Image 1: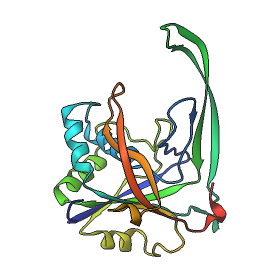
Image 2: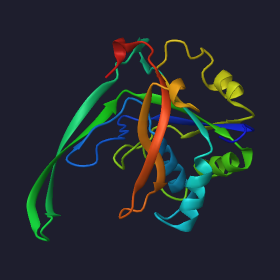
Image 3: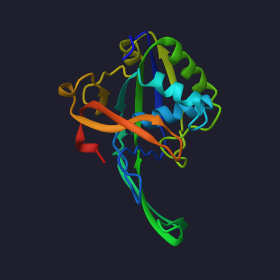
Image 4: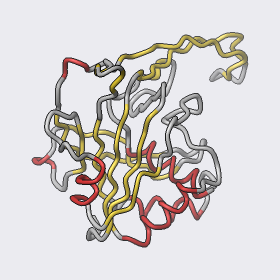
Length: 226
């Protein structure tokens, strides 16, 4: 990881969100927290980087040096915390390709989304990269979405650029991290609790590739978990 000289904070809020890391076929599940690959894809869209391009590859190599902390924050309505729920959407897809070269007339898929979820993502690392990402989030080249194109943000994604993560936490989570579900990158296997394949190497549709990331997952109040 790079030495920390800045921290970029993303606000991820919307009626629907979906953060899949392990399902790519007929059943598309969602994780409880944003994935590193989805955050990287959002920044690539904001910067206007074509899938599989040399510019995308260069950015993803730089992005790999950032430390990511993702935090689930409660949504309050009428002084009541809204429970985070899961929605499963049923799809039919016509004329999908088969292994023998023919077409399948109808293929069934199921896709999951989170409801009533909100997150803060803290990206720490070298300031020049984060300043470029912050400028792109303020004026994105392409649209931004929360995991899938149907998941539109309801608030500006850019929340702030700070000198370090502690300053960012103080400004964006003044009540602290206690009781909040969160995950963050760790440097070695023993420091983590799980490994997920969400470090993007390439987003080209014909050559998508990801490597493993070791994370420390800490659960908060699970009474409102999906």
